[in-house]
Image (cartoon, rainbow, N blue to C red):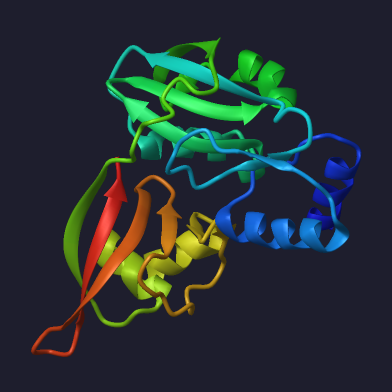
Length: 226
């Protein structure tokens, strides 16, 4: 239904919602088969989420100014708390307490009314040009962890330091997003390059599987988005 809706929108000369890499690949292939022409809106050179469109992307970039320090994970947590679906917004850029966020134009009035805080920090925002930070490159801090396996739940446990029971609760509460999809079980075997988010902790990428320790644990290099 999701992809059928995207095809229908493009067929009407409109734009899709924000698509993660997997979704954009599938929809692009469908468009080629159906000979539907489209353009790609990519807010950053290294943007993960894109919008396919026919005449215009129908996207707004908002510049959010916070009165205190805010982080990528706080912004993501606020969007989660408002139950805003991931396809409604694109990449999140945080620089010096200023947040740049791309959202669907249809969501703008909702943000005007309800997007007043990031966590407990008051904010103000204005609309700005779509390409305002087009050359921005995401900042990632790499750190090494030991994990009992490559399963997603084991990696989450290694990062958070939580018990197995507490990690299961994160999955039950749908606090884990893996490869841009909410996951309720942690049995997935991870591979290098996989992206995942842990609500209240942040967004991560499995940068490298370095090897194994003498005790047989995996040595993982994890990059955290800043």
